[in-house]
Amino acid sequence: MTTPSRLALAAALTAVASTAFAHAKPIKSDPAAGGEPKDKSNLELTFNEEISGKLSGAEVKDAAGAKVASSSMADQGNKGLMVMLKAPLKAGDYKVDWHAVSSDDGHKTTGSYSFTVK
Image (cartoon, rainbow, N blue to C red; front, side, top):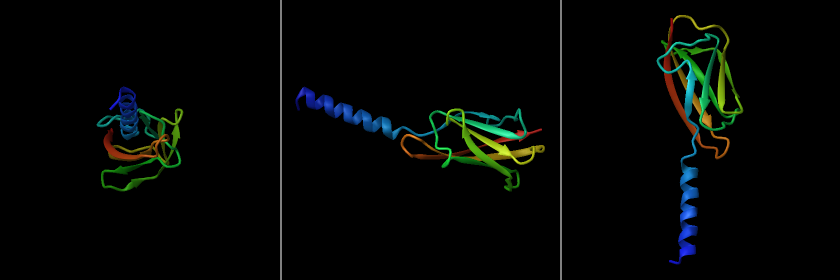
């Protein structure tokens, strides 16, 4: 294989590899996993890349697994997801189930974490 062919192959493999790893993942949240929220009316997740606000969201559940009334929207230049609660959270344990779709490649990621309100 000639040197230009090798370089073209290496560039193509690099492009494929970087696309394969482009998934939106949370890098920060309020409340943090296992932590306590600063604001009992809103939750925030910040992702490592832009997400599609129309295709991404989060759901909050109480310790019994019941959904907490809320809505969510993208913010912070589409790298953040704000969850607005219909009523402030009461003392107890909660779980956040999130899903995010990357704006650049359309890949969907999901996850969850728990926190406690005192």
